[in-house]
Image (cartoon, rainbow, N blue to C red; front, top):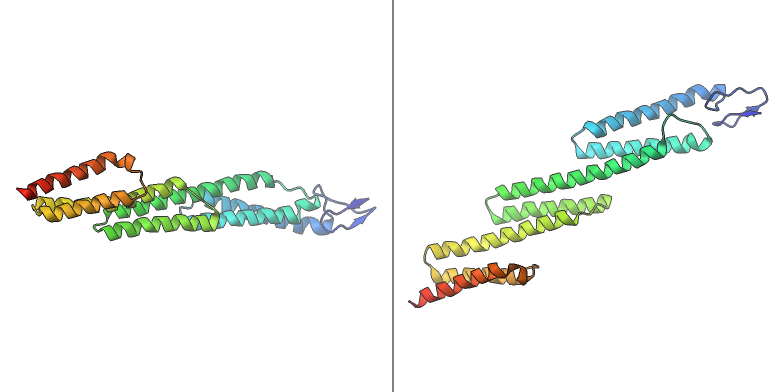
Length: 222
């Protein structure tokens, strides 16, 4: 006895299509399935070609939603569709991860580029902090974590603060304001002593700063 896979109608004289659908269901169900597949294909094209992060992620979600509908409404009822849903889901999951990671690198590089062009320390730090905030948002929204990028931004902030302190000390030394220069170089030493980097890794830098202080102290006594 034939039975429709969609409406469950059955009967001795009931005819079903190659998809197991009765005459009443065959046309409408095929139309719906084809429309879902069209939406998936259109969305996949936008995912591949769009340059906008939110557009690409939105279309990924659209693809997943339509795949779920096909699986729940049709495949679960034994209706075969011309699409490997599990394979497509796995593929789109990988693509989503790639989109998020690419955005993480692009945005971080963009913020650090702006930081590098900034004239003041505050502006440099603000842009770097925007990169950290964006990485935090990706973690909260998508569970994405990238320790490498986080360390890169923190190192930039550290170097920017160090270079700013060092420049202030060098300016005072250049102007032969040795007492002020010594104080500024001591600020550099204090910064290096309190940062998160092992002093052994900064031994040469610390020693050079200490030598500067010793030399300037000698000049003051003359």
